[in-house]
Structures are given as C-alpha cells and as structure tokens.
Image (cartoon, rainbow over all chains, first blue to last red; front, side):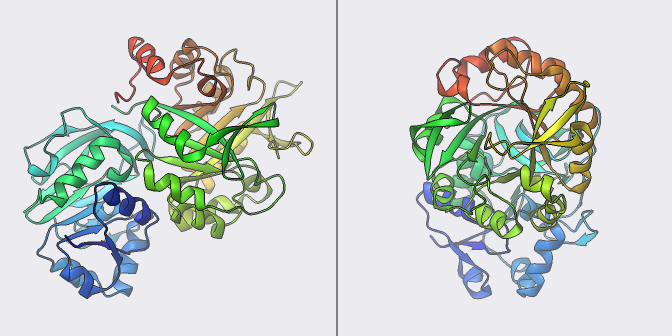
Length: 199
Length: 257
C-alpha cells in the first residue's frame, strides 16, 4: 500500500511516519502532487498554526491536489482543522472539504488553554474508522483550536465545551488528537484508516 | 474529562540515562530507549528528558537519541536542557520530540520564548522555572541550576516570570520548587497554588514527591495539570500504576492504561 504523508512543514511529520512504521507501513513523505495523487492513502499532519500550514500548501501548489483527492485522506491535529472551511486562527481560509468553521477553545475556571494531555473520547456515531476504540478511551491532545460537533463528528471530546475529536465524511477523515502519541488507541485509529475505515 | 498527567523525568547525558545525587556523581541507569519504553509500560502519561550534559557547558548536543525515542515511543515526550535558539529547537522537534523546554536561556533572553512560539506554536513551548523562597518571603527564580557551581539568584520574582512567560508564548509551565526538591516531603503546594492563580496555561509541579498522598495533595490543593518526578519513580519507591489507583480512589481523573 502506498501511503503519502504530506510534507507541509509540520514538526510531527517524523512521529507520524514512525507510528505508521510500527504498523508495518513505510509511508512516503512528500510535497510532490504526483506522489500524493498516486497514493492509496494520504495523511496531512500538522503542528504549528493553520495559517502557516495553509501558506505552505499554497506555496507548494498542493491546495487543489488535496481538494480533488478521491482516496482516503486523514488530517491530524492542525491537519484536521484545515479540512474545514475556515479557521479562526489568524482568520485563515482552509481546504473546505468539510463544512464548518474551526474556532478557539474557550478557557474557563479549571479549563486551561492549550488543551494538553489525555482526554476521553465519546462516541457520536458508529464508523469503521473507530472500530475497536471503546467509549471513554483516552487520547493525547495538544491544541488551542477545534472543530464543532456536527453531522460528520464520529468521536467527541470535552474541554470547556464539546468539540470534534474524530470526523469523517466520505473519503475525508480527521483526528484532532495525536494518534502517533496516543498509545493503543492512536494505533487503532491509524490501523483502521490504513485498512480503509473511510469511504 | 482531561486526565492529570504523571510525568517521569529522565536525566540524559551522552546518550545514556544517568542518575545524579544532588546534581553530582552521576550513575549510569541504562539505555534511553529501554527506559523510555519501560516507563511507558509502567503507565507514564508523558516523559521529560533532561539533557544535563548540555546547558552548563554551553554546547549543543547530538539529537540522534531523540529520533530513536520518537520512533519507538507512542506517548508524548519533551526534551529539556541545552536549547537556546530556534535552530536547535527545530532539530529536536524534527527529530520527533513533541515539546521543548527552556529554562536558563529564556531567563537570559526572554525573546527566545516568543521566537519559539512563533516558529512552532505555543503548544510546543514549555518554560521550566527553578524557584526558591528567599528570606524576605518572596519566591524568586534561579538560573543555571544544572550546575551547582554556576547557579545564580536572579532578582526576578517567580510569579512575575510566570506571567511574563505566558505573555511571551509559553504553552506550559513546569515549576520546580527547589526548597522541596529531592527532600521527598511533598510538593510545595503553597507556592504551586500561588503559581496556579496566575497561570492560565497548563502547570506542571516538580520537586518533593515522596508518597502517593503527596500527589493527591498537589492535585487537590494546587490544581496543577501534571506532576513531574524522578527519584521516587527511578528508585521504585512508587509504582505509577499503583499511584494512579490511589489517585483514582481519591476522585482524581487519571489515564487508565
């Protein structure tokens, strides 16, 4: 299976590649539209800001490539946020593959931003992407922005308010947490994605 | 609900984990990857690797071990020590660390915190603070604490630095209370509660863990997000799984696995 990891400059690129290797898959890190289009699975990781990653995708001329993919696509963390129409972070227009807008998590007494650490996942609907992930399983989050719980939300999480932890619509999926750093739960999600839990 | 994090801290020198007694006489503890995986299996939620060889001598280090850890570890980890510029931080993050922690270099040049936050996002940037209560009753920061001969007392008040560090872009603060460090009589909950009151980002307590009840107290009385400890875990005095059972029994949310 050919898995392309989109090189959008995120610092967790290596971590995601290693997580896939632990599952027996050697992913190709690439910013080449041809490599990405030819892959069986595409993963868009991202650590930094929505604006930084979108700017890099524009510079690499990958925006239309990503918008027109038909194979399963998984966005991770900021990579998931970019799947939506818009991010409040630096007022950034995103890929628009999923309806909705990403907004800043609201701090409150006892609710610290960034949301950092292991938090529980709450099932919103059944989906092959989250097969084997129990209700209340924990995953590792590090983020300050999040997507709302809409029709595409498969797993939700709570920090101040509720937000989407895993989304899926057609061939497009996203995880707000870091599967590469979420122990067995994260490995399960990546494994399901590779086994084509989406589309 | 967000779990409170239990974070063992491993001292690293020359690519090996070492154990120091009061910062001196380091004893080899084993291979970094072996110990990282052992702590992962023992229930650690996150790991901190403190590169003690790095900062005091002002040299940069080889980060090959970071990549080895990243390739095998499936929980997050932070690298501290010896990071004094964006280029070094980039090397560490690209080798696979999830966060980088800065202490003395941030005191010497606070703009470093902003540069790191701009380059990598606040979620990657941890500011470590060593703090001591002085005779006038104020908590003030210490720099160069990695080397007892070079440790310096600064006029900067700890709480002021916590506020300033957040303004500059710290995404997490680790507060090491030196009065209680290594004594195993409990965390300095008074100082940590004062820090909590001015800290809107995650706050991690360090220094003083001796018994499971000390962890209960610091979570309950200082509302910290995580606790960092070294000797009680390395010595086997406290097993992380048992600690978590104890915390859970006291109504404190922790990770199950």
